[in-house]
Image (cartoon, rainbow, N blue to C red; front, side):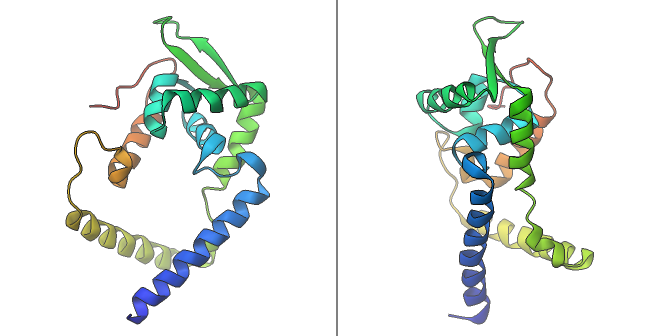
Amino acid sequence: MNEITEQFLIFNKLFRRYIDLHHKNLGKYGNFLQGQGRILSVLKMKPDISQKDLTYILAVRPQSLGELLVKLEKNELIKRHPSQSDRRIMMIHLTDKGKEVACKVTEAHNVALFDQLTKEEKKQFVDILRKLSKNMQEELPNGDKNESFYDDPQKHFEMIKKLQNTHKDQSTDFLD
């Protein structure tokens, strides 16, 4: 194994432990990568979203999402209501308490570890990561239409940007 691969594997393992430690310090909602924390992270970006869109974004079964929403509602972090434009669509929004918790969760997205890098080092690091990611994406086979958008992280982040730019109480067609 060459030194680059070895150092990257060491960094990867330590980085996962580092992130886990910071998530634990934020409590049961602290992990923005799973469970209730994921829902709060999405709702922070779009405080009023349809349950259907949320199911798609999180790539979970509607039943699984429903269970998580019941827990969040019980803890007074979210409320559900019918859409004003189509009463068949159930909208989910953050309560004031939910907004406070969501802010704490989303702050965990920014890893303080990278603050020790200079502006130029950060730019170089991002450029290197983009280059390596592009090369990996080109080597990976294309998935079929039924696969999750998570198979293509670039598409996932494009979808998140689209989410941030949609209007309140409006369903977003992510299948475009």
